[in-house]
Image 1 (cartoon, rainbow, N blue to C red):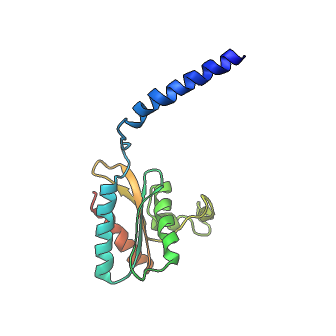
Image 2 (cartoon, rainbow, N blue to C red):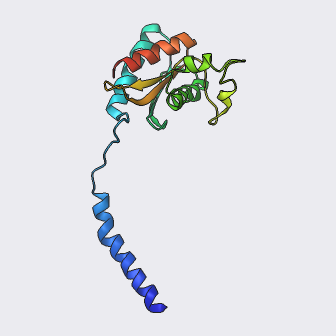
Image 3 (tube, rainbow, N blue to C red):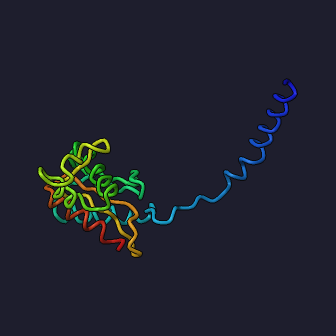
Length: 165
């Protein structure tokens, strides 16, 4: 038994010393269909520009294809409570591959998706979340905006989303 333990430790030591550095040096690749940081920054810049034009401080969130936060920007004086709302709008749009305005319209009382907002740790069902679709018509993430009226939020989200099409 002791011989087995010693040989196992030697094998594990060899693996750690020689195999892991090879794995660690492997290039990291972005999955196809996932938003890049460069794309996220362009989207944020376009959203910020639109928010400045309409003079409404906004929180702007970008999530990747998996619904994970990729980039975020909070303008000076944007509502603190809108931070979470902007992120949830982006996540909601990505989870269901439609705008939060559209999802909200089919989740009203008497509609087929009534009550969906309580799923997935809470969703946001008013305008301001839009899937991000690349030039190959692939959804690569979503944008969520909060800080103004729902129409103002949506206008900023649309401006951001337009730069990658």
